[in-house]
Image (cartoon, rainbow, N blue to C red):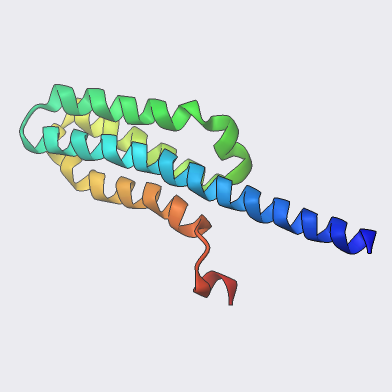
Length: 125
């Protein structure tokens, strides 16, 4: 009976850890996407300096969690998001008008990090 109780407690701890991880990732990616949305709006309005500043801020949020992402996110996904940020920032520095097309791809990729971790009926069955 002790083994079964220990196994049940371990299973509950794993489920709670998974839920906490998913909630953290939702907040983390939401903060990045929110900052990118304001940056995109600034870019559309022609305020390229503010757009660049906000894109740098979003990259700072991304980099501030490198210890977390290095453990819980696939390295190919980490690389794709990091390269997306670098491409966006480079475009904002060189040709700001061309940066508008990059926002949706980067934002979509950041959102997909949460979507991949979220538990759904399709991911369970």
